[in-house]
Amino acid sequence: MASRTEPSGCSGRGGGGAPGILPLPLLLLLAAAALVPRAYGDRRNMKFEVISSRGSPDLTDILMLQSGDGQNLVTEDVTVVEGEVATISCRVKNSDDSVIQLLNPNRQTIYFKDFRPLKDSRFQLVNFSNSELRVSLTNVSVSDEGRYFCQLYTDPPQEIYTTMTVLVPPRNLVIDIQKDIATEGEEIELNCTAMASRPATKIRWFKGNKELRGKSEVEQWSDMFTVTSQLLLTVGREDDGVPVICLVDHPAVKDLQTQRYLEVIYKPQVRVLQNYPLQGLTREGEPLELTCTAFGKPQPTEVKWLRVDDEMPQHVVVSGSNLLINNLNKTDNGTYRCEASNAVGKSSADYMLFVYDPPTTIPPPTTTTTTTTTPTTITDTTATTEPAVHGFTRLPNSAEELDYGDLSDSRAGDEGSIRAVDHAVIGGVVAVVVFAMLCLLIILGRYFARHKGTYFTHEAKGADDAADADTAIINAEGGQNNSEEKKEYFI
Image 1 (tube, rainbow, N blue to C red):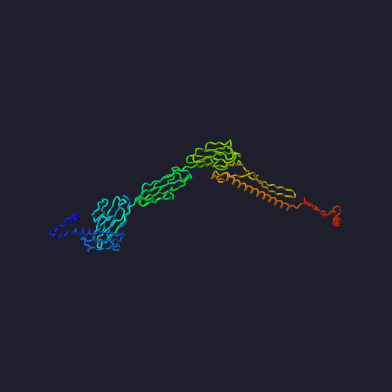
Image 2 (cartoon, rainbow, N blue to C red):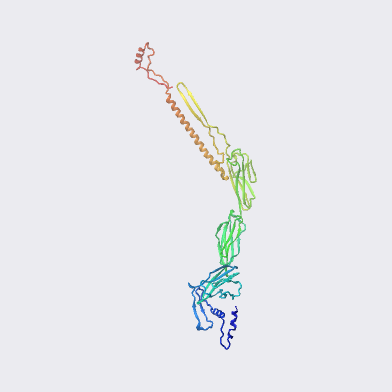
């Protein structure tokens, strides 16, 4: 680089006022320095004024350089995150050993070939050849953003620019919640703020894995943006302990998020469980054991049993959340309620009790056959005796006949099943009676068809006193017209 110091003594070389001959390297340097580009506008098609080293106005040429199909320079735009390293590359497609230089947005020379006139040490030469000039810039800041120019000293000279964009990720991502502890059914407000980003940040909300919609506001301070997103959320007991996530969508950062866990208080949730009998109906004389379960936040402080619209029977034993009846009877029918309360409120669950008759043993049906024989009559009678029906002759006694899926509504299901059994029994009895009547009619019809009865006639009346047969015939024939009417007697 000693050539940069020779211009200071060139005017005294050669003596006698005759101009001296400059070395070839110095001539090349002066020729390059004589090309001072002056840009008009911000277009890629640039206009340059070429000034002769002698400064004579008559040697000025105006050249228009068009970055069209004949352009040899190639470069790409650069996007970099603040604080990271950016690489600027100027490449020549068809190199003819022309000089390449790189200028910053203020049109200051960063690199002339492999020499760096600019004193900014953040710029470092990565590669230099006849076809490429590649420079790196470390610790990039927002002030480094802008257009960087690549110049190729050909005839005519060529220039192209690359744009550097500096991204600034958001800082201090914070969620502010209106109330740390919310009550079930209450609407709360959450705000997520992403400060000092470039460009503006997009904020997304999630409750667990479900995305929610918020409302965002953007504020600009100089070249930075601050974004605040507001979320209105109505909470329920199922939201207790669920995270609410504020997620940032920004090109400078990935998976940047913050979250807050919801804390929701709610009144107790009450259920009544039947411990005994586990299956089947509640029958007279049998025991009944119920348990009341209650869960809430905070945990219920009081659990009590009561009988709706009536007093609790004296033989009912209540111990905390348990209710026990050792010997059920019809007077125990009714609705039993379990109530639980905490600081938020009070809840209850009902159990409807219906006591059924104790199970009875039904005797099997019997068949009786009676046969009566007389000299003139034969009677064969068959009768079927059915057991008497009192109330409900058959009640469900297994889990398959009774569903206890919902204990609070079990009594209504039992009553419906008993009504179905009642209808079936009545229908069966009617069918048996009709069948018996039909059988009786058939038997009577057959009896009367076979036995028409015994009777006497008076056709030979008067022949009994005759002395001989001829006289009897004569008397019978003669007295036939005067005989009494024939009478028939049915036995």
